[in-house]
Image (cartoon, rainbow over all chains, first blue to last red; front, side, top):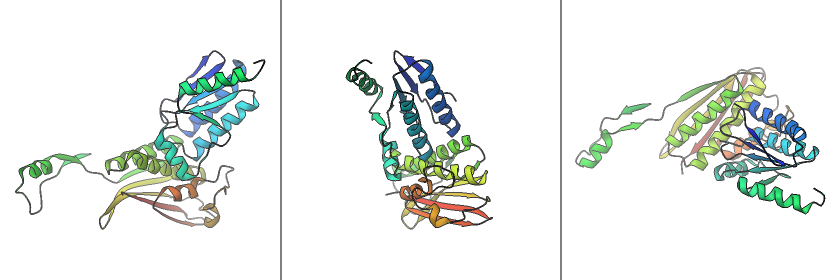
Length: 122
Length: 159
């Protein structure tokens, strides 16, 4: 299972399309961190709408992606966390502290665009 | 699996009830999922979600169950290499629910009390797996003997 990564302007958009194994999530993390450099991207959007669960591994790995991408000079937005998934994360005590999340892809792009305008010279 | 239920019990007077009883219904059954690779984690949680939904759990509750199964299956893989997840419908008096048993014959957990604490992990991970699972479920039981494997039983009841 591979997660397609689409390059759109200055951003990378990874859309998860089904349940992912741990290996798939790790593969996605590594691909994004590498691709940010190759494409000289300013932002990464990970769409998790189709993800069936966000357990401790998925949450921890997505948090790692955001932090690694930031160290590479770009911004990550996790979009599309479903209500049931959010409910389960909260009950379990899982947080995405320090990671930007938005309702959906549109809001995610909007966030990155506003951020790009706010930073002079970018 | 779909089987037909033959009408039983004293009340057969009502025609509509009769026809309802004669309709084939899905009967939830126990399911066993072997856990040996990380794709088995996905299989186990999907089977668990399907069973929970079949038993009448709302989607949010079925997601809780699936998340708990995901954690337990990963622990099997991580610490024991292989094991099994057993999913079953359960009843207690009027209550109905789902039970999940995760067992392995791995090295066992040296310090169960510590493993149940938030943030404690011997694998360099978040350490929210077992304590998180306990928070997700209504009942949680763990037995682990050094060298004799681990058995975790969790239950969620329908409201």
